[in-house]
Amino acid sequence: MAGKSFYFIIQSWMLEDMQLPLGDAAVYAYIHGLTRSEELGKKGWHGSIRRLAKVLHTSPSTMNDIVNRLEQKGFIHLYNGFITSTINRDSAPGTPEEKPIDRNPDRKSEEKPVGVPF
Picture (tube, rainbow, N blue to C red):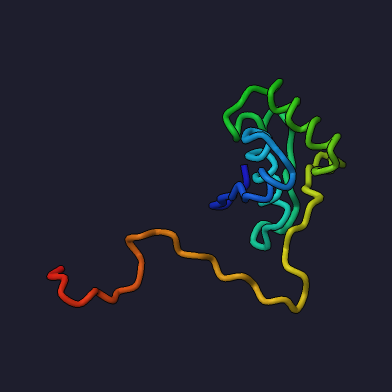
């Protein structure tokens, strides 16, 4: 486990560009989050594949298959008990960050149309 509070995000590029199935994308996203986390020291996953399987609630054999697929595709790197992601999708230096689009209709603008009582 990451030790501190930690969450990870399965991003669309992991599914679309990398063409990962959902299970593989979830494992990759977890490792990628640990690799990119400033707060956790950018170390990636440190521990056994069996422990990673327990943390992500899957069988050790399934996790072993996923890790092997990700490594064969070059998406992760294993060394000295660490697993790190190898893909960096951060913006290039000097480019403005895209602002996320708020797609929650409950949080749209506070303006109310004229003539609507509520």
